[in-house]
Image 1 (cartoon, rainbow, N blue to C red):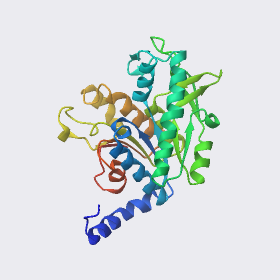
Image 2: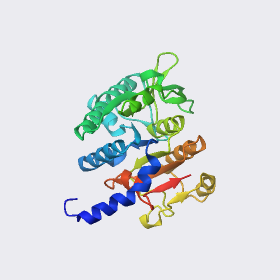
Image 3: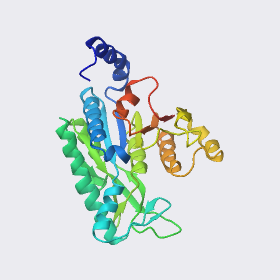
Image 4: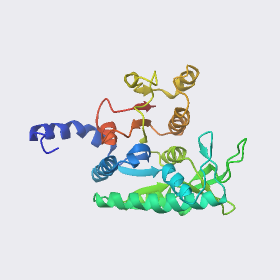
Length: 286
């Protein structure tokens, strides 16, 4: 940054102005995951992006996963991670670990990291203020304490943003019977974005976005109308691990979020590129 001439810096700021005006006072929900949560350089980039957005008056809500950390902790206690259709089989011992790792270690380290970048953050989980309520997910094979979201209450999130905090949310949910459920973070982010009537949902991933040919990164599809999704599935363009991510985007848009984006979290400052440039980055669903 230090070698950019002052005139160019000024140009960059002026070009960002219309976007700053467009989103000031609005809410965006960022689902934070993948490599951007592992590499220190990318972590720092994400945090400085969020602090910048917060300073210009955009309410940022950060929803995070933590699969690798959960698997690591299970390994340390000699327990094998088992997945069915991409969902972690979560028995009683595992849900304790999930709660401890997500709501404890991962959540609070992110709060601390954002505050080291001069942001104001507060760590929450789906149990706080009955934010995420769930019941057991019905599945052909028993997944244990994996939940299906039944309601999202945003009161506690709105209280935090009103007071100038970035809410950092881990996605464990409360059951009506006092149980705790593990919730897919992409899904939770989509539902939270819808309930907050967010202007944008941004899912950070380890891929460019939706590709016409998954082996060729130059075949990025920049914009998708949600009505095109079924035919893209039939053609096999949307397949495998992309299906649940894209379904989250479709769900968010159908529930009233203006734009949902799948962006490449491996690129530093991908959130700012998405927010403040015409071309954006990744794939946008509307």
